[in-house]
Image 1: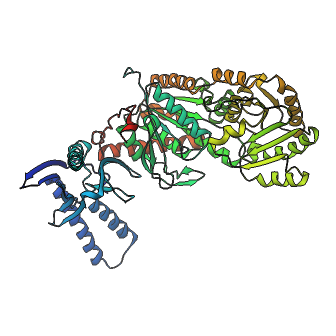
Image 2 (image 1 turned 90 degrees about the vertical axis):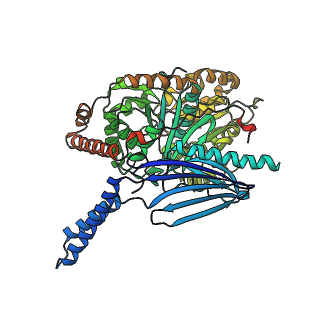
Image 3 (image 1 turned 60 degrees about the vertical axis):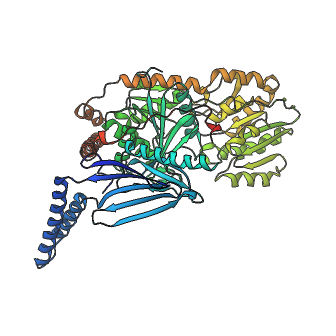
Length: 182
Length: 438
């Protein structure tokens, strides 16, 4: 249940920025990553272990009763609850002149990338998202011709103070582009 | 404004824009006037269709449309503890000091006030309607109201009759109830620039055509008045279940040229309908406070109304003719009103209304209620539980149990999601010339 765990309580969100100036273009990378704590890692492994032990007991038992079903449900919920988020870091790569790329890096090594061309972005905004249980800030992009916003950093949901410098950099790079073409 | 005196108010109700009605416009107008006085106001309501999330209205009024589905007559599904996380999040991130709930029929209002009291925030409740005591629905709702008002800081009612009704239904101490009547936007409801001639008298009726609003009385009264006064014409605006009966009456007495049915009238067009008439007829069978007759008086119409609920408290005696809710008495009252018409000056009436009723006055009086609420002592859970025991032999103990579970759930939430991890929202300043940037 990711909505219950906040970024600052047990894990710490870390914001880093890399700026590279290649021959004619500048690449700006804003990353938000999670630092793993040993306690949380141990807890998540304990959860998996408990679940496997429970499955073994179920298989060994001759008949199923309601108690064992309830126990399985409780152990499954506990294991899911303490499970570590699979996301290692999320980043925005601003390629001035081309657009920007949203990336999600997982602990398993998988990377999911999404590119948004410059012409499609109307404006980046800091939006308050309301769910039935909570309310959080997110960095969103208003896209041309789309009626839905494209949301960034959806897995990690970093606090507002980490999102503000990214939003400022995005706005200034997009405004700078408009200024040079007008 | 001095930071200490500035209140940060959360208005909670199931009834808000885009839905239209008395409670909705009350919350909106009061919020706007409170913002002008320097306070911060945030409104919380349930989502309407696609409209979900955070919206900003005029003056920087922030509205949270919580994505909880309405299940019955615009009310959110009552889950007792389901809304605790989101209400806690909103109260912390907006740094709220007072929670103000509106309308006894709103489940979201009751839940929000319960959670606010558990978390130690000050709470105020406004009741907008009169309710009965005898039928099953009223009995249950009165019990819920008793629960909410057992531990409230202050309450507001819109008329003295409404105060009596609320105090009897809930058992709250009368000293805790303030009476602050509704008001009307006199800038929007102005009389017609040219006075209408008295050759043909036009009687305007604008209401929902339902039993509660006395549509059955209209069916009896209109033919009799048309028979007695050949120069009288009726204009009826509004829609509802009883519209069919009124159409049948028109057919039966051949009054098609004397009774005009407009159908549902959007609020923006109400003024144009009102200024086409001389007399405003209100036939409600029950009314805590009737804003419709305020709007009519502001437009310079003489009002004829049934003497029910809080209606006698609304207008001075020379602006209204009251009647018992029987057809004969109402016909007599309309005759009396027609005779009084030449003495009425619409512009003088409008000026008097400007002095009598204004939303700024309502906001200042509500501010006094908030100040008084902040002075009330909170008390820990153990000090507050005995207040619920007075609600009844079984009900009292049940309510105590509900509050204890709520408290425990709150403590669990504090552990899982500490208050420090919920970021506070920065206050945005509304700049006057922001339209130019867009």
